[in-house]
Each structure stands twice: as structure tokens, then as C-alpha cells.
Length: 177
Image (cartoon, helix red, strand yellow):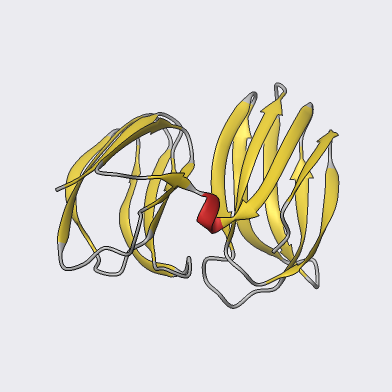
């Protein structure tokens, strides 16, 4: 796992210890233009979009959740100062029954879900809102929501879900029931 904190300003490529383990990146950016972070394979191929925003940015995203890639670097496009904190996915924010947030995040249940559970999901925003369920190892189990703009709905949380990734530009809430 490539744990560490990296800081910079403007465009850069951060070399990481080679990893195929699902991980998270807590990212911040202070600027006015595009802020984009890609996880790159050993050949430099863009594998996972880790951050994507315009102007100031604060969010957490997972990479390597498909379990087949070896990540070597993070590519940063930025016009201002930024910080990337790379952590094991096990360090994701704890998710009890209700979770609220703004922007992108990764949530962690105490243990994998058992049986069928229902989630109530809400988002108030203007751009992509995407929620993925991940298993105990941090690999994708299923897509829970994918909508542009505001969203409100109930979906099934697949048995065996341990993590959820949220891509959002606005405020959101997820409640288990």
C-alpha cells in the first residue's frame, strides 16, 4: 500500500510504491481552474479518476476497486496548491446507519452487510452523482445510483457490502434501513 501525504502546486506526477490494493485518496486543491487526479498504471495508462473539480476542491475517492490493476503513480492537473493523502481503504470514514456529506467520499461499515438491506439516498447538486457498493476487500459489488443533478431514491444494498464510494458535487445523505 502506498500510504503517504504528498503536497505540491500545479501539474505533477507522484510516484507511489507499486500497489494493486484498493486505497483511498483524500484530496484538497486551492485554485480557480481544473483539478484532476488520475491513478496511473505501470505503463502510464489512466486507470482510475481520483479527483475531478473546478476551483477549490475537497474530497475522498477510492482507486484500484476493480482489483486487476497495478498502480504506480498519481497524475495531478492543477493551477494551485494541492494535498493528496493516500491511505488504505480500511481508513475510510465510518458509516453507522446514517451518513451525510458534501462532495466525494468513501464510507466504511463496521463489517460486511448481511442479508438484504434498503438504502435511502439523497443528493442535492448539479453534476454527476454516483454511488458504488464495494465488498470486504474494496472491490466493486454493484452500482447503487447514477444520476446527474438532484437524486432521491431507495435502493438495495447488496449483501457483503463493506464500503461505499460517493461521487458528488453537492450535499448528500445515505440511510440504512
